[in-house]
Length: 276
Image 1 (cartoon, one colour):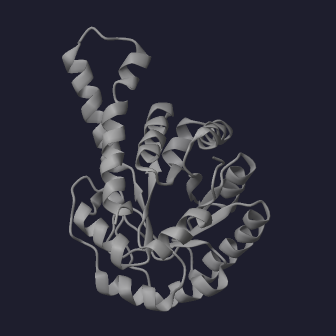
Image 2 (tube, rainbow, N blue to C red):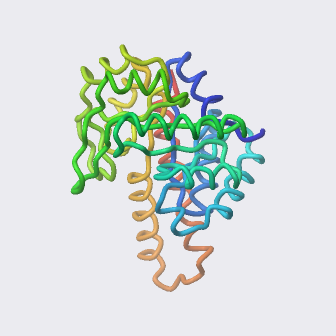
Image 3 (spheres, rainbow, N blue to C red):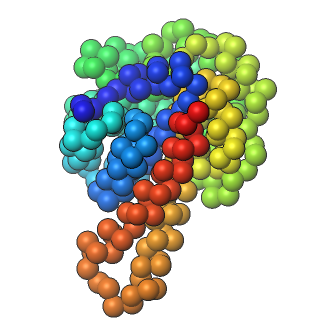
């Protein structure tokens, strides 16, 4: 199975009233575990390299690693550069094998956000790469506050940017370690009425499973970004390994011991948002 673009997997999800998981990758073991869980579930998966990952692993390396996994997988795998804060960030992803990039112009005036996104879309589509954009600002737990997406700005972005998907802010928050019932469905419905593209929710870890299921079934939200809860799963598994065997020291043994828990965590996520 060859690597897939974001557009190729989101369009069927929108038609079929299900959603896909954008999973934040920080290393080889978790990336492998994520693909294995998707293969077991028989559904596509989106492997994401965010700013933290890219600061740890150079883009040329993580891009090739993800593409290797995608090309070996039995299900479609999107390799996605998440939160590119500049067009150059995104161009680097395009140049190094990513099938999808996200330009985060959420802090820019809407006209500038549209202009930069549209220019990137032209380059990316010519290279066979999808583009996700963002309107509104998704804040951070114990950090910068959110700014809800304005439906009129979202409508303009939808018409003029050419982006394949739009990330929105409707109560979702990055780095949320506890589940909260914070999604404003009225705000989401207003955006749905004004737009036509697949919608994305960053900060998916803070959204309870039953709310994710409802969003996947009843709205045009087709992608949830998930990182924090999987890092929590990794940390808990790692601590258990070290507590169970204080003498273990081999890096490969320690990191591989986290993979079953990571697979199980992703399987639960996929069961919630992809199964009807």
